[in-house]
Length: 121
Image (cartoon, rainbow, N blue to C red; front, side):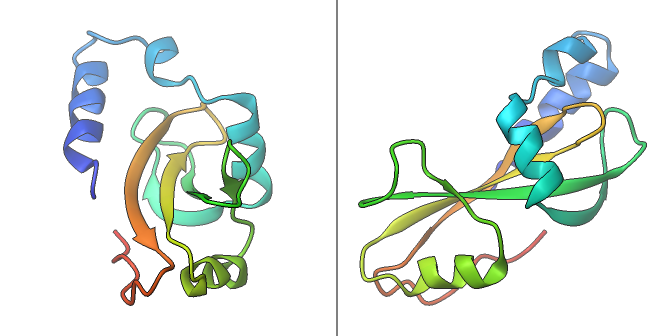
């Protein structure tokens, strides 16, 4: 599932001055830490500060995982979740480590025989 329309609506409201930078740049410190240390660099610029490339951080939720999910640190780790017999749900969050913009980009099922991985942006 893509969240591009919701993202564009928030960015539009920010650019019109209806939302402040404090309203849209509110990433949790743990999300920022994950973005700086294990995120995958994207080729998109931040829609708020336009100063840096975005980072995609993937979280996986499912049975036998911590209640807060697991932050995926590598493509090899993500591939293991795709091969699981139990279903999991993956969430990809785009983060700007500079200004703390963050938004859910997409979510998709994995494991339990799901064959296709989601298309990248």
